[in-house]
Amino acid sequence: GAGVSQSPRYKVAKRGQDVALRCDPISGHVSLFWYQQALGQGPEFLTYFQNEAQLDKSGLPSDRFFAERPEGSVSTLKIQRTQQEDSAVYLCASGPRENTEAFFGQGTRLTVV
Amino acid sequence: AQTVTQSQPEMSVQEAETVTLSCTYDTSESNYYLFWYKQPPSRQMILVIRQEAYKQQNATENRFSVNFQKAAKSFSLKISDSQLGDTAMYFCAFMTQGAQKLVFGQGTRLTINP
Image (tube, rainbow over all chains, first blue to last red; front, side, top):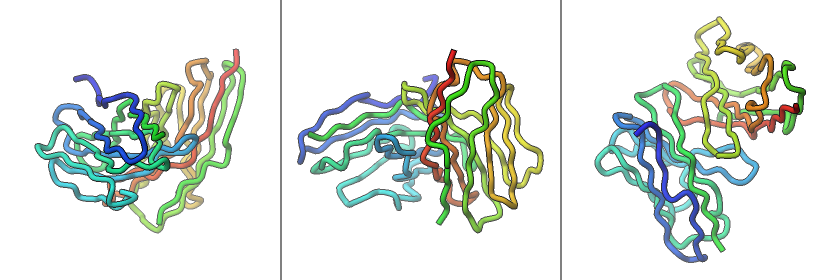
């Protein structure tokens, strides 16, 4: 595909529900990132993959957040037992190699009610 | 910890004017990268310009240029001949060579008026 694709674009979840957010990076990109962007704020780092290896998960806010990239391509961010404070835009980005700019998707807006 | 500060929450200029967005950062690292990203209402972050810290020459991309002052840890973005399509949130971001993750500022909402 031409760019990073994220699905769904919008997700409404009831508090306590589990959600899964999908990211299709640009083909061939080694690096993949997840960021969380609260309303009116800058994105905050969640986790980083190099191919299938999760090299940094220091930004995951709690053990309810889990990310995977099993074959080094598509990635899924899973949030268990969602809470209202999880409401945000979740951005995925990919990069062709280390130390390069990241190309972002359009994000998934998660609203927990 | 690295931090990025954008001191201007909002700015507004007339079309065709020049505008400068401010950004300062704090780090003890010597090898790093700086970026400006644009985020229109569609939410997609679009790279505007990138600067490697080891390069003394300021980066330029068409109407966009930066003023990189390494000693002062300042990285401002200048937009010349501003256009209506430049209206967006602008984020300054920082990345160390080893960490890979971007650290973003709080953003500046820029409005270009006709």
